[in-house]
Image (cartoon, rainbow, N blue to C red):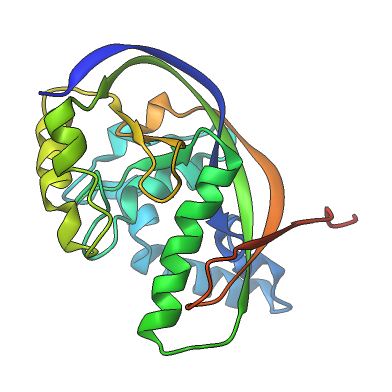
Length: 232
């Protein structure tokens, strides 16, 4: 069974599509204030994060989410947008904060899923995606996989079927009070990842740099270019 030990790591990397890295795109629209207010109300009614912050959703309640601290909305979104099939260490009811210890590990993780997206869409061109890097620190008692779990929980394919064993383990650990899991990256040999189960344990979230990642469905090469900060 996964074993628990003290763990400390500063400046982990979570890459989020740049289009989702701000509070709301509505504020940038050139529309009357009343229209913006109406659209914001509609957005709040249909957005899982905002719904969870007001009244909770089946997987997580308002008491666990962050309020009034920098980048609270970014952290909360990781836990309230779990996706229809979940991820490696979370199911469809509740998300987690995933991050790579190394920037290159996070790049390889997101590049893998973008390649799958292109393959599923039968898109042969090389496509460019912009990602905002969010840094965060972790300190506390976290779980690590034992030898049997390393074999059963880290299968690379097929997605999402390969997540079944790891989701069962994660759910069991979550409900026994675990802070999260530290595990070897599946997409980058030698890399390390963390899946944090608790919003309050994502310490000092902050913006890093923006990276332009270029991938093609049938090419191994992942091209990365750091973007210059926007002026003003």
